Length: 275
Image (cartoon, rainbow, N blue to C red):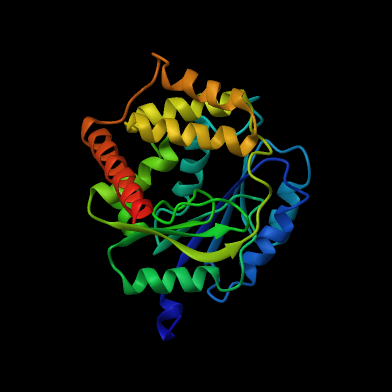
């Protein structure tokens, strides 16, 4: 960052449940950032270990929730937890970093991405990559993404209580003429899918339908998941969600944009591979 660094305020929030084994390292990596966050919020979602104590000892503000019996964040519960964290970062921050409790960032992560976003006023959402994890250069991943507060506030600064809320923000940014980007900055996190179960993939199918995914694009994404996990049941679960009748969809404008965006993306991929 340039000398404007001290004028840029970054807030971080971390949803966590029973993460005593890793959250210390995650927060320490934040405290070692070249551009240090102004505030770190940990939403302690019903932990019964030392997650609360560790976060407090490192200077974080901790919001303790009672255990509700709902496992994982692959459902609409995610919106409730994230909105609690966002509410604490509603004022006084230029950028918001959403981070998993197991996600360790290099020292230059925040400074390098924020510098790029400061230089490009249209860049609303950006992230790095997780080492050895497949990624899309156009779609910033969930954990580790940095979002401009001005964009967040423009669309309401609340996660919709629907499946697919995490992807909603990226597609809504693109629909409104903003840019999103994935930078080749390596980060480290727990292996993808350690908490996944059949409901995860059913909900993935439902979320894809809710967002208006182009059917060919959705099937390709489901198949890729099944190949990654080497389990055909993953594809079956995703399709089960896709063909469900109880899906609450996003507005027509967004769904039409998503479908056309994905159609064009498939065409670009075909043209690139045919050259």
